[in-house]
Length: 593
Figure 1 (cartoon, rainbow, N blue to C red):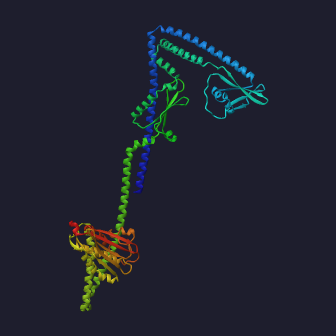
Figure 2: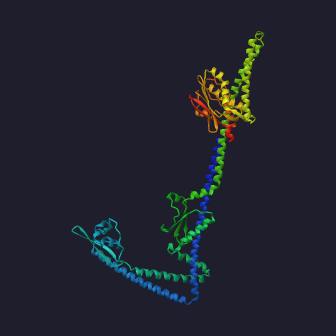
Figure 3: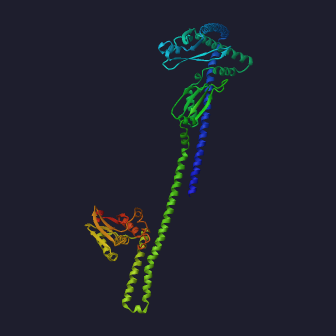
């Protein structure tokens, strides 16, 4: 049974583990499919919006055919203007180079410094001490070593922004082995305004040229203009800043829709990075440790159809993926746990029944041995007495005949009592025992039992102390069975005493009840023994001394009779100090009330 139970537990564990893996794999596939779908939608939406805008431009262009000529003139003007601006920029660069060469000829070492560094550390003389200068050996050119200068601050302080676009150098001279430096400001390397103008004009020129290319290719090649437009759109869109190409609200909304279609409704985090792995956008619905996040990350490229490399990547994080999978398989965990608990309970119950049956079997075997011994003694005595009566010499002696007849009678009564006790227990189990409900005076019953057992107590050299002080002792019960109850308790007090029995019997009243206590100073009981004394066939072990006779049925009979008469029985006992039985019965007047 244990092996079978362990086998079932192992199979359930294997099944749950495989189900978890399968659900996890299905979850991964669903998330990946959703990501690919959303990435495709974003790309199509961008192209669609771009083409839609281009179509508006084309329709405007078709309505104004003359705009083509104007467009060509505009291109020429743009090219001319771009060339003029480039020439101006070139002249500025040449002017800067000349002044820089002049500066290098005058000073052996110069170092370029940024304008914020100049405003923060150099211009403010009180912070000059924070400036550190390092001369690094450079390459040797025609036996002349070109040294390099490194300038940096030894302490970080709040930076002052640049106030102009001049190019500044620290020029160094060596006078009497002391390095001196002065600041030299040169005009900018290039005019930013001119550079911006050139960039804007080039963009405008490219847009005009793109329109003409689309029209020319469509006419010459006989191709579908929408196809040519989509190719041009892809090329043009790939030049846009990545941040401007993604609508993050649309991305999050579409992801939620796709996940909902695949029955995924767990919180997730979004992270979008560009081609330089710079973080562009992120959401955090639930903070988790890095180890947990890495276990549930799914990524896909954005704008995969761009010419060249993909410009970005979107990643999805599920911080609580294990709980999601557990929720998906929770519907079968509860029945499995219930079934396992049922199997364990049945296993435990079966073992308990087996042990109980084994114990009962041992107790019944002991009972049969005791019963055989108890029955064998009176039967043997009766047989010996009967055979003696058959002897003519004994039969002629009337005194000896009467003595043998009394022995036969006493042993027959003893045998009958044993049989009656066993039959009473059998009747109790089958609910066939008849209990009379008549008025009974407890004091009289207790006194009668003590009188009948006085001879037995005297034979054992016992001491009996009585305190029959209950003023109200009228109860409703069966006098015979109550007598048997008191007889069993007093008999046990005599049998389970090491030396001469010392027994105390009391009766007294409590509220609406009469209490009878039977106390002895015998061998007593342990806590474990006290819990078992009302079980059938149980007998307190007495070691190697077998002077205590009985079937182990007396206290079971006592307990059952008291319960049938609506009474209570309590036991107080200490090992080697004695035992006290306390019986409580409701008074008849209390029943009437």
